[in-house]
Length: 239
Image 1: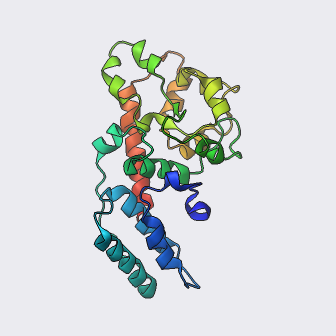
Image 2: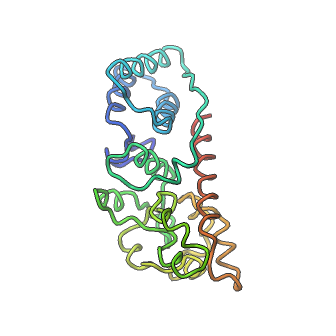
Image 3: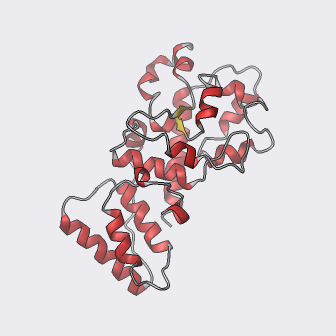
């Protein structure tokens, strides 16, 4: 899980029973096809069905063992609920939260000032019941602009959360991203497009930040565009 999906600990795995199913696939498997368990992992994570009973676990184990013999796995078409992504707020024991955090981790999120620095280890050490995760658009962005307060319920959505180090979180604090994204003191200007992509942030925010006449962004538009990116990325890991 760490080497192929970049998940640095169990708090990024949606369901504990996944370990049992994966262990059966890899046991005495001298030439594993990693695409098979990867597809199964992402489908199971975002189908959000979970494990109802031990029969379901046995069926998943049997599915992976059959796939090992046949060299391929059939994955049903997955329909991702946009509202479920938008509503989900961080909760350590939520399978949906863990699935979203796992997809973020899979992108190898990096330091805003140094794309070569992986931030996952630092972030994982913070995960708990009350982690200090970074809100891309802070609550004061919504409070200070007319028409945005209607989206206050979404400010803690995981669609507004990014992986950054504790030091970055403190340094950025509640600054407006439209201000700091164009500031070389906060973001590497030569790599900012790549950095945003690795954080699954819509590139439109860079255009907004470069517009001198734009001092605030439509938060709802940002959330919807980020949901689009997540759904597209889920589709890409399930070819």
